[in-house]
Image (tube, rainbow, N blue to C red):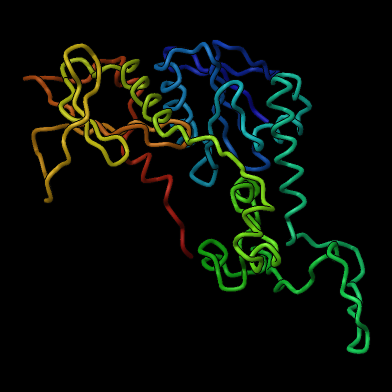
Length: 313
């Protein structure tokens, strides 16, 4: 395991022990699992966070290669995978109890639904046709197709995936399972009046669709436009916005049908924590060039394309 602290000038300082702090940006390299983590303290300025992202990208490209998977998380919003990594190095005391409890619930749930794992239990005996009893509900399923280890497959098949070699369930699948409503047969077949009267009314909290939008606006305000450029258009989700003189963002009317191309704009895409926050179309002033500060946080589009490279053969 390797720990590096990111400084505001983009330099990396090796750490002998992992120490997290609200003003720090830390890169953690797990060489056993081939993962690279970018941890960002809650009090860090937005620019330092993107400098850390640039530093991680450069480190991955120069020293480790695209086989290493980069991931990022913010303080007090650590993922279950990050907590699992901390458990390996016995550093779970560095995160809050609330994050630890939430992550442990996800880890436990994921281990329970991982039906692909081989177990040493004996295969359950099924009742004969003369028996009327039904098998217990907690009998482990054994009728799944055999999973072929990737090491036994040809390299191009192992990387691209093959029929019968389904991916292993992940923590993400455990999270998604919470949103799936499973109904019993009697509930589906029950008469409508009885179903309505017997089932309590469950009030669900409305999804705050504007929260991600506001976070994107905040990132844009904190970053500002590069020196010598100004924002002409901003795309967030499937909406188009323009920046007002007061620093706010105003949604434009529904755009007309068509294909639009511009050779006079410079596009800038802003990604954070696995989300595309915004795509900006910047209008350069005459002779505009990126400042050293803007260059320090900017990454080449080739780095993004390299994330999706698949080696065949």
